[in-house]
Length: 153
Image (tube, rainbow, N blue to C red):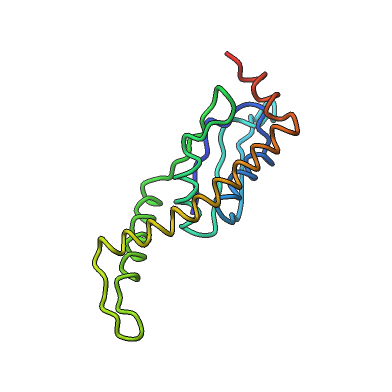
C-alpha cells in the first residue's frame, strides 16, 4: 500500500524520513525521487507499507507534520488506495460487530466505531511519542539546524 510523501524539507535525509515513517508501522520500501541531472534528492518520494493500519496511521500523524519552522510534510494516497483503505476500515468494523464466542450479543456500528477509534488512539499515542524521539534525535545530531538553515525564508 503506497503513500506519496511530499514537501520533504531540504536537508532532511532519507534516514530521517524513514525514521518518521517507521514509527507508523513496518514498511517494505522507501524511494525518494532524485533530480536526474544533479542526483540530489527531491522533496518527495513513495513509501510502501506492509499493512493498511500503518498507512492510515501515517496519514493521520504525518500529513501536515511540522519538520522545523518552515515545513509540513504532505502525505496522500491515490483514489484506488483510498478505496482500499475505506473498505479495510469497514471490514474491521464488521469484524468487531460479529457475535463473540460465549454468546455475547453483537454490537452496533456506533460501538464498533468507538472500539476501533479507541484502539487507533492508543496506537497513535505510542507512535507520537516515538516520532518525538526521532525528532529529538534529529535535533541532537544537528540535522534540524541544517534543515532550518537550508529552508529559511
